Amino acid sequence: MPERYPAARENALRETIHTGPIMKFSDPQFVSSKIFLIYERHVMVRKSLFTLEEKFEGAFLAPEILPIPDEAPAEIPRGIFRSKHGYSNLSISQIRSELTTNYDSSFNKDFNKCFDYMIKKSNLFDRFLSVVAVSQVGLGCSINFRLPSLDDDEKVLAEKLERKLLSGLMCEGGLYDLRLSLARVVRDKLFLNTNLNNYRKYSSSKPIISQNPRLCDLTLDEFGLEFSIELNDKYGYNKGDKSCSISDLEDFINTIKSEIEKVKGKILGGISGDK
Image 1 (cartoon, rainbow, N blue to C red):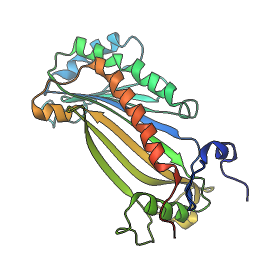
Image 2 (image 1 turned 90 degrees about the horizontal axis):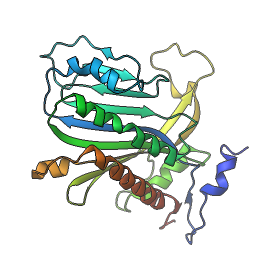
Image 3 (image 1 turned 120 degrees about the horizontal axis):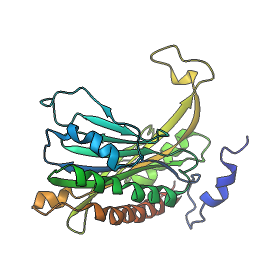
């Protein structure tokens, strides 16, 4: 059987002193990123959209203004800016502005390129604040990345995950899915949230007619681990501290970069306690 990721195998495998199985993955893939700004409710934020279009200087297409009444729930977006190629969206509501970007194959293998893009686009929030007089209460950013598995069978991956990440008291075998959510405090003012789960990507050679297709009728193209890492200043806000500024986003991103290396170091390699 040919290898599913032959080019990445040599770089992905690591020698360890363990005699047990090894967590084997291909090169990590950067999937998406998000930068968000939270503020006190600004009822008239919709009126700023066309001024923002000028301030953004061609970074987005003309805004899509949504017909939402001012008295509707504050979290519903009032306008959305979309990038020319469709990879980035800036959603603006009365209490939150959020820039979301999905990365394609020309970006997602080069993490530094993706992080540089995030830093470059963060200046959009400076422009937003220069136009919209809001009282800022929160700032954060997050990234999603994947580690496609090099195992031939997803059941093998599930078994390794159970033994790698769960204590002996919780390992009972037969694991199908795993989802972990961790929150830590950084520098006594930031929350660092890490979420981990396994994922599967399916495809079909024929048009899917059923609303509920069976997995046995689909092709499993890829499976592995997916991570979401977020850094925000909510911990400091809850203590009464002032919200971080947009200029802090580069430090946020560098902290996430360091956390990614820690996560990869903990996941890759041998599994102790092999029977």
